[in-house]
Image (cartoon, rainbow, N blue to C red; front, top):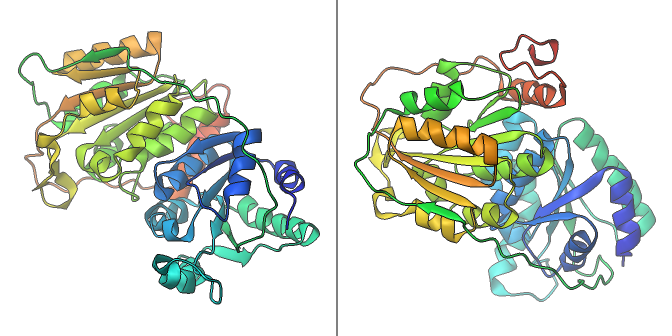
Length: 391
């Protein structure tokens, strides 16, 4: 068995001090060590964990993702449509439940057989983690070379690999909503484009804007392409988890997440994670047109969901129903002064036009690199006119 303290120190030497994941009995000692010693974000699901880790990478951290192999299936979407096209490297540890010849529960039988095949299909490099600390240390060095070359790397961990790490008593916080403002008048129902123009006009040199996949990112790109923009092109539902990882890693940066109703519904558990960790520098804006606008206008079920109540119940400091563009601008200006994890909800109209929206000319990984340069830049010119923002 590997001594957890020694193994953790080897990870630290390589710069891995940010952990996120979902519990697994095989990985429990590594998870306990991460909780005891470092920054650990308990994700609602494995896909969210990958997105949180990816946001941490944007913010300059080297994260570790921990999950059971059954949860690897949940992480497929971000691994293939976020990490792959954007070349965002994460170091993963995935357990091998259902290992051949090892008694286990029936639900793990198939996944045990296909875990490594699934990693191969996703073009994620992997190896079995050794039981020997010296060999495992050499393996970590090899894995780090892939991370440094912007490629994710996963260790497959068998039962009995890690030595015992007792979980210290956890000090759990209670995150309570302080301001909740519900609907009180008629909705103005602006177009998404109009709302995005208001949001974009209020950014400054401390702001990063993360736009969810589909028309939201493409319309923001048409309004203005800037080095503090990130246009999600896949991994639907992961944008606020990406924002959480970035906000926790770059606490002086204003992280504005621009979301859609279909996206939030797809991974609504992320609201609970966001609310608990509650970064003061994160603003989460939901533009709800009650439709999957990018795929033909099919209705979502958002008309039956009270997102303001849900965000408040999940611990967002402020959860506010926005009726108009004027209220949207006022609330963003107020948030910039007072901060605190805030959720703004605005009903918008469905897009009436059928025109083709422009797509970013930058490749996804070029956009990622541009944003990372922006975050490293002291001057942070927001229109690409600073050397650190040029592509």
